[in-house]
Amino acid sequence: QVQLVESGGGLVQAGGSLRLSCAASGLTFSNLDLGWFRQAPGKEREFVARLDWSGSMTDYADSVKGRFTITRDNAKKTVYLQMNSLKAEDTAVYYCAADSIYGRLRVAVSVNYWGKGTLVTVSS
Image (tube, rainbow, N blue to C red; front, top):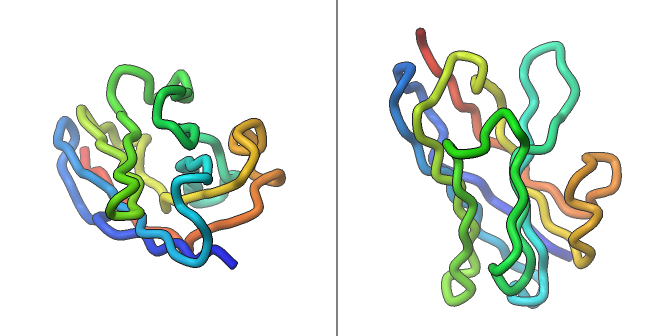
């Protein structure tokens, strides 16, 4: 069973930066594909970014492309989401996601493993 624990959320002004972290345990981390989703109040959970097990393949939602970067450190069993040039519309609970199949990390209903989320609030 995979356990995912997010950290790094908080309050930031528009234009600022935050780095989210997600520490994983329970399965062989280096075999997992990883991703980030977010859910704003009253909205569905949406895809933000994903990264394959090797770290060589990444994918981003159009709304964050060029501003967010997903990376992983297999030695630390941690995945990161660097968020720059934050906007008020980035305000949401951010969830770490993991799966053995990269393709599942594009749609929330397909993902097998979730963290409990960390709140990011961007003030305008």
